[in-house]
Amino acid sequence: MAEGKFAIIGLGQFGTSVAKNLSMLGAEVMAIDREIERVDIVKDDVAYAVALDSTDIKALKAQSIHEMDAVLLAIGENVEGLLLTTVLLLELKVKRIIARAVSEQQKIILQKLGVSEIILPEDEVGKMTAEMLLNPEIQSFMALPDGYEVVEVIVPRRLYGKYLEDLDIEATFNADIIALRRLFEERNALGVTEYKEHLIRNPKDVKSVLQKGDKLIMLATKKSIKQFLEINS
Image 1 (cartoon, rainbow, N blue to C red):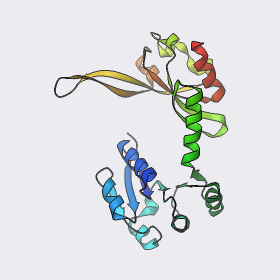
Image 2: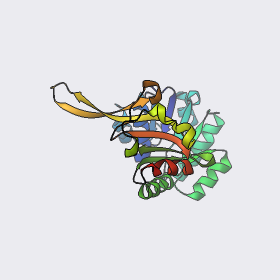
Image 3: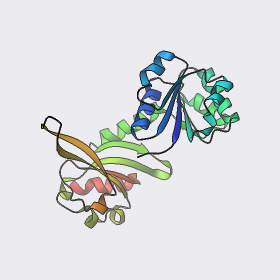
Image 4: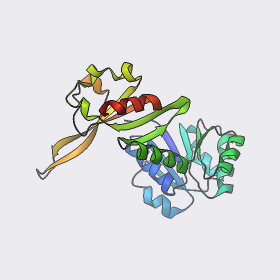
């Protein structure tokens, strides 16, 4: 399970999604918004849900915001609120600030203020969609610095029935296997058979035989991923 304490400021669609998913992964999440209606939506899904004005430094101090491992600013279109909150978080010496920008101009301003981790969700979605259109085997995609990517790929049919540890993917394709996603047949409380997807961490350690429907989560360069996907060709 994930560990850490995180604050999400701004509970629009993006902030709410991050807050819920972080919480599901085991993190301690404080969800913050000035609108009580938005706070009410997530209050049952996170450790703490607080309605406050993030441009009020006293309100931030009262929630011990400086003790968080990271704070995500997902305020969105309220540019003034985003910038004022950013300045206050920097003043409070928050360990790590991640800010969502809605434009390149906003990104530049945040960088000038001293924020180094900035997300442009629309750009990221665009990159992911383009990658998935070009390579249907790729189920999800995240670009990283230095030309690396984390991708979830459908296992090529040529690898069905083979042990993952015998393939030596790390050496052959210069790729790290992070996890394996697989469907398992289970019976629910009513005795009905259903299929649920589970994540196998360190799959080589459990001597996994690859099968149809398996998905590998890999860290590699774009070139290495392309070579891996060409196994079927």
